[in-house]
Length: 421
Image 1 (spheres, one colour):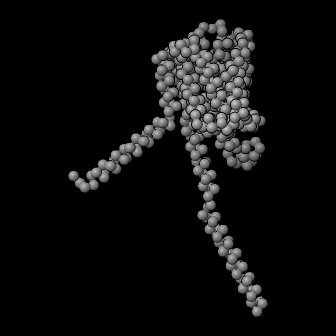
Image 2 (cartoon, one colour):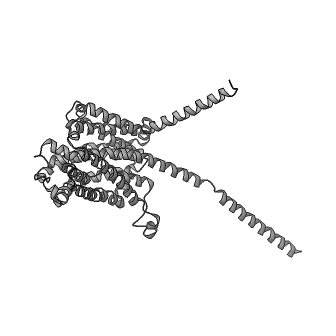
Image 3 (cartoon, helix red, strand yellow):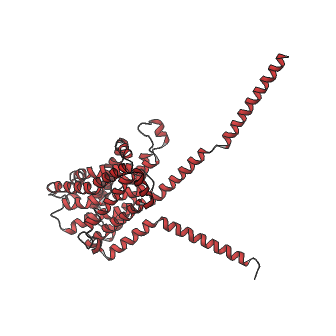
């Protein structure tokens, strides 16, 4: 046996342990994606547990309970002045809300119109795509993922609140008055009794937002104002943001329990499902890139018009990239239910399928964005730390200037001494 065999064996073992540690760290960093796969699998095998009216009454325990916890944690974590500051950010409102309601809906409508010429794609899928495009941004997942990516949570909370306040009014108008009547293939899907049921939808949405968003946020802000140091310590020690991630998993689980319980995914043909999945993924990525461009336009545009093309901070850009492309099924499903009350359950379920698929895919894309934005944040922090340190080149220039100054003083002193002689 060679003398260096034990050394090679230890080196090989060390390399194996390093590789295993790297794999473990990577999987640990992607724990939310792995957990999301597990809860979807549980929803597939046991849909009756988490569906609406199921064993755990998810329409109350999850739809209200999980969202209440998320916004209570946000209220405890955020300073009030940050919320006020972002509420006055007009440019942020314009970028997020115009993209969310007008840009995305127009693109969804254009793709659905182009696909309506194909007999392989079901019309219900295309109508569901158009309805998805008209929806406002989602609430809970945006807040959770913005916090994970170290973005501006205050900006996200302001935008999701504003979007979901406007959604019950704008979404039905865009769907029934603008998009569906424009193409003959979709006119049979215009709900005749939509306007009669929308007031009940407004009351339901405002009630849900009041109880699950406004009240817990206000309670958290009041508690933080009374005991600021104690609350901040509790948030850090108890790691309350992690609890928000668990609530997000509960929302995903309940969503897929409803989808699998309705059997709507099984009734749609394969081409429609494949088309829906890939279109959703492509649009989610495209809208995210478009939002990033709006938040941080090229430098030459900012030089040309600093007021119009001002580049947002990294934190605000993160918020925009999560809020602008996202869609909420929390409003979408009750919206379709209220508009298509005279239709059967299967018709409503078929229209809701694109919403369910898009919201699931946006969470997957969002987790990739969390990784990218956290890497961006680390790179910016490292760059700032380097800039704080003295640049060797600048230090050498300063030394040369000081040396030249000393030489000039020596020359002046020499001339003065000679003149005195």
